[in-house]
Length: 341
Image (tube, rainbow, N blue to C red; front, side):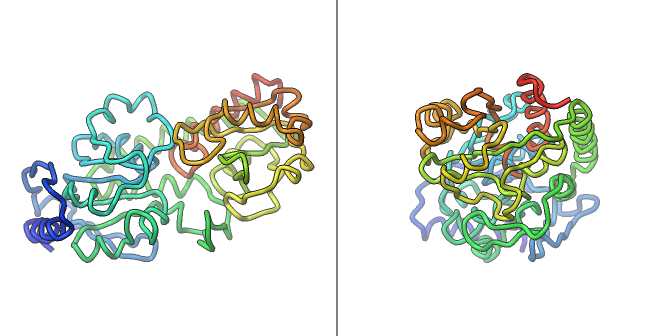
């Protein structure tokens, strides 16, 4: 579908949905004869094609947004949404130039109002029923969508956050960067970014040997806490640093586990998600620590008695380039606590 036809279809859909004034300024149409285009990829069970480098990208999750910003695409982004944390400091200036449609999931109508020519997401739930909209609704309007491979390859979506048949590796993050680079004509930047991330991950892994140290990762919710299973992004951190996750016996990505079970596993250290969103209880690290030290079950845990906490952004606990930063942050935290060699 041509750009003109796509715009006409989106425009009529927005009108039908009673959206008044989309507020987007039409850019110059990108060249349809750009070198290397069209680009077609097989992505999470679907084929997507972009005829020319996208000029109005909407990213629906923070992880995807930070990849695009790292590729130098701020001026080609029409909007972002769904944030758990502040943006990486190194990306703050670029991010300030991009419209934030919503801190949480935006509506389908709000995304269409930005006249996107590519929509990206980190999680299938965002581009699924109950999220912003299923991918097919965008496809029907001629808008290509891209979903991070880390949320579909080796993973079963059996409800909630799903489970993994195979442990996630950073290769899925590097694949996302490579493919977004190909779709946006920023392949050289993607290659350089991957090299930088690989160097950072290796340096962090080489900085400490934490074998024998037992860890638990708490993402959110103090009433029915989400703790990391074996094989998601926290598993990448665990493996890189030689840690042992006390819940490595579950392949659920973020199982909800009651506090009596957590206390019985008695980890040496707790990695706490320090989230800035306000969706569930126990979002900030400060709130988590207050709960842990006042609850009669959790306050008896060794990690709590000894205040062995490592704070980590929610973005680093999700599959993304921030997971690499998570390896560095956990390594630094272990050294600060005198754990590892």
